[in-house]
Image 1 (cartoon, rainbow, N blue to C red):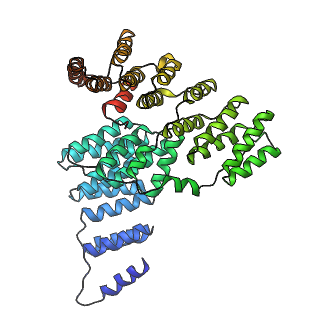
Image 2: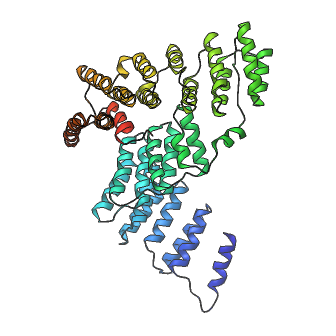
Image 3: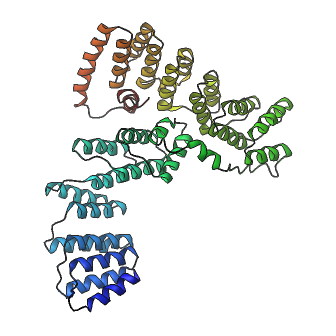
Length: 474
């Protein structure tokens, strides 16, 4: 900045050179980025005094840096001055001003500016849509944001790498995983990757929610998740009520810190025989580390130790263990884990229950899937979980059982969604039941036509469509 300012003043004295709007705008932009707002204002005033043309680019730069410095009112006054001087905003200036307003909770004003932009015939670009989606994600309106995500593509504007990174990071901060999966699917299809820091945040978010990281890995084949896990140091604060730690707890903690998991396996086996109990936080840490290191046997040993000694684990620990077992094609203990999870007062939720049932179906484990479904509370036996169970029996080659589950769902007054019909049509066609498949395809078309006139769609149907209508599950 200092060298640029010295050069700016030196070149001003060169006889054959004269500063214009472009050099002034460049210099004031440098001052703004450096946080020297008073210097930026001084240059802007000089431009006015010298009668230099001040165009929309200059005004946009000034309002942007004023907002960055916390002077939102000054940014808004600059916008009004620009309009008063007859400068017509471009898509860049409209977008910059909208971001200023949305970032500072001026929602009505930001919405009005967006409407004004559309009415003036200025088409939004990728950054404009990103600003809108970033605001919507920030206030928890994920459906509306993803609707914009789809509509911008229909309008010929594809979300770029910056947009995907911003949106995924927003979702991670809110702990929402299903929008992340939708965005990752788009990224996979368009060969877009996350920045490494955002990738790490997304990885942690998916693991914390017990979600599969398979899609994240597919989008980023160049990043080794195992290497990341090996670099990490286990953090364990211990149970505040246990001060100081007993010898057994301290030994587990030392081994955990050194990542000596084989020694922990042996120690837990010995402690189990002696009926010595460790605390919940430590056992959760042991299970998480084993899952991260792809050691399902070690994670299962820690789980069985916890179950036998009456330790109730955190919800994320149960989910991480289930995810680890699914990834390693180990399904025999999943029903027991879900039962322990339920006893500890934790719920799978509709989305995770549907996903788990579907995964068990893909693994040809219809009995396990049915037990998981039966263990769900009545309010989670909805269109999404029923559809997942129908898919399980189709995957097992028993079309009649699948259709029986579907008819049971209908008798209970649960209406099928688009995802349900996708599962029915695909499953029946695969099993050679073409006539049945054609009948459901016709019903699907009728539902698609009726969907345009529905005011709202229940969350269970949205989850069902997310999982089965858009082939998110692979």
